Image (cartoon, rainbow over all chains, first blue to last red; front, side, top):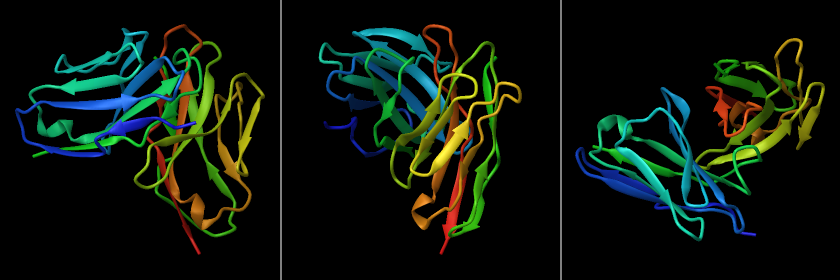
Length: 113
Length: 113
């Protein structure tokens, strides 16, 4: 069974631009969570989607948004990029939510210049 | 609130040495506890988990026991290998519905041949 895939793997943007990251969960998984990983803050939860609805949200500004499609694929969008948004963005999927084991993708490394 | 405190790294050991990475947590009730491992350039992989007090999680020679009395979930391995070099994250999932995984800051482990 294929694992969680994330595209693109690497991305370079400039301040003020926006970016969209994609995550395809393991087949059959309906929950997708997003995390930001930085050396200073560690792993921080962004949001969780289940059946196309946002079910949980972390403490990030409104510039960070996401959505989930009917096939459970999820996208994360960051608008008006700031230098501090440079990070590894990880996506995790599970059958029905955060109460179950989450399987992580390899991440998208975003560099904002 | 919920939090995880991990032993600060980096940790450097010789091959075949005994490994302990300390993890303590703060949470109400009985959270589930996890160890995730992140190899260079990759996402997080679930290493082991325990869902109730006195449970022992084990995988690939690693073990951790859920100790409610000391609120700890220390990771141990009897004889480490160079291939164990990675960053290790302790995490907790509270028992409340729709709660999210909370991660420790991670401990970088380097094994020297």
